[in-house]
Image (tube, rainbow, N blue to C red; front, top):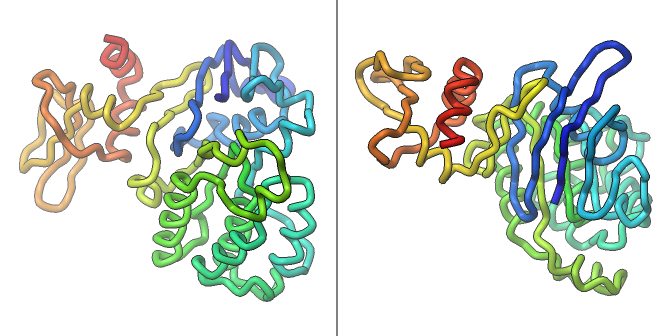
Length: 294
């Protein structure tokens, strides 16, 4: 589990986080949302030990990320939005990287590259931006780490590629690491049987709407929301109708009418719309906190 408690972080005199507390539980695909500049990328870097907090606690299982313990590092991987690579092939790139990760699975890498429709022998410089993004995603997944942090992974992908992205992430999130390659390289049975925890930081909510659960909505000095879809639908009602509601926390025009986000006073079921949810939370921070604390 990832635990942040009373965490502060700043770049020189610019505060990013003030007294943030948050937990990411094992085995989930989290959606990390927030307005530009709230520190989503910084949070991922704090979790993997690339940035150090000014105060407070950041722990991943029993490890403190900033201590850079080798056993910690081999079980977490951060894939940034932009990666500078040598002009080599994805196959050469991952084989060099994989020696640092005991659960690295070469056969799984090849399967992922095939699934994502990219040639593993083609050099990065000869690839389109989208092909390179998919190649690096295959590399990241094939390391089979317990924790995987993805920053804007769907940027630059076309519509078919976004569908493939969702497919491989879903398969990965439910596929316990039982590969022969990994078992031969490590004696830790707990690592083999552990379901990965994935955090996806994104602005492209529609790309991952049917993939992420729970959802974390971040602000500089507080976590506005950390809830599962089940919790959200029990607290909020998403009304898809022909009229605006005066009682709505957020209203948006959609084809054929409106979507209204309302407090779920009558415990009715509805389909969560993540974009509407985000806007409802952003515009009603205090009210949303009251609703979810009750």
